[in-house]
Image 1 (cartoon, rainbow, N blue to C red):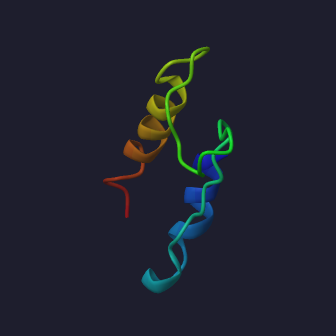
Image 2 (cartoon, one colour):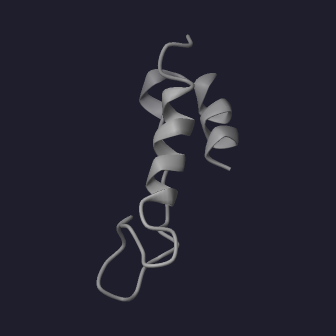
Length: 58
């Protein structure tokens, strides 16, 4: 889903290139991404990988 979101905003002007992410592992303390007991850093590593694939693409 993150890759699709990146592809959708790539074509937009610089002031409209923004993606909001709602954390899926939120437990009521706040809305932020963090490791969990089941997958550890897996979700965060997946986000990093998806973003890094587009870093050098114009």
